[in-house]
Image 1 (cartoon, rainbow, N blue to C red):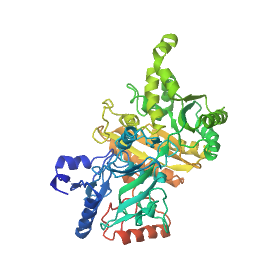
Image 2 (tube, rainbow, N blue to C red):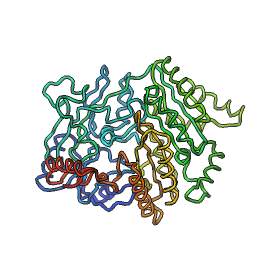
Image 3 (cartoon, rainbow, N blue to C red):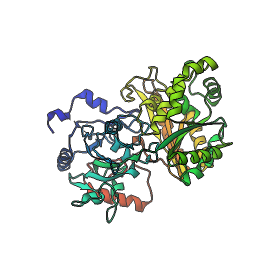
Image 4 (cartoon, rainbow, N blue to C red):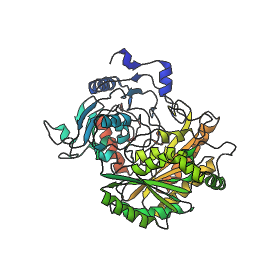
Length: 515
């Protein structure tokens, strides 16, 4: 690679060993390959010499482990320098990228080309890798929000340095490699998602055609048990295709963290009685949600009618927003303040990033909630690792039933409040039949004893959720490897691992059990 792409400098290694919770793993060296050939040669050398390697894309895996390997002594392979957009097809709406291509990179490319396609953005950071998020099965906001479901034609470097391409992309002169996932015979794409069976160095991502019309919607409910009614009201619309994209619902703690940092003068944790006072003072509710409608104007109008009908009685407020109403609201904030005495400026500042995410525009605004308990203000360039933010994510999945959502939220809120933390919860109607509940356990790592207290609370929560059958779709480093399944399933995973990586070289301990 050249000495400039091999980092042994102690300060850089220490930064790479830092996550948003306490870690002990040591990294002896950082490798920064520039292309697939260098990745392949490095893995071949690592196999011959028995050196474990831990690959990351952008390393912005905050809350799940950042760049820190599962076990100590791994060479960190940083793929962020592989930033080529290899192919772009405007007619068929796909793009082929390397691991260093970020959400912001793709968004900028689409704008530069004046493309008629949208990307889907997660609510993490514009600097996050597209491939990294897809391989962790992350999700966003538009009808293309299931990121791994919109990917195909993986280029994968195996632990021994060989390269494979999945689907038709692995066949000579194949013309449908970027537009058809399966190819012929067994499909192996899923083997490389949330696993340590290969390093994905290239991927084709399908883009969403820009709709004729787009309208966001926002709703609120101040009922304590509101989450059950909302989920039950929206499920039929999600299942019959009226709602084509994910709908996000947040509890009051999550909304407050999006509005401001921990309120001065309050005792931690903020108990429900104090939250009622803050909700009244800051004008938000127990449950808030957002989503969007996409299609022709006629299709959106009909979906809007059905949505109003479904949420009647389940919510106290339902509002719709499009480009025109957003422009009008921004233009008349001064007049509105003069007439009503209320300032819309702050409301628009909070709404615009969410509105943008619903149309595939990345934003760093949600990342500010990682600074919830920090004494410092949220910086212009947030970096939770650098700034000592405490953040641990857990993401249990449940059936899309109101009763399930209410039970899950109740368990999480009780456990985190008992542990001394505010339970920040978002429920996402992720598929037509399942909800993903993303929980952020947020604290200040600079406060003595908080690391230990937070990890104790996290492990207790994870144990309780799994005991009740709620398993997370994505795991933080302390939860790895994945929970043990039946013995036959585990034997299958181990046999594949042994066949591909008998020396246990690639990301040992990550998802697939060690050899």
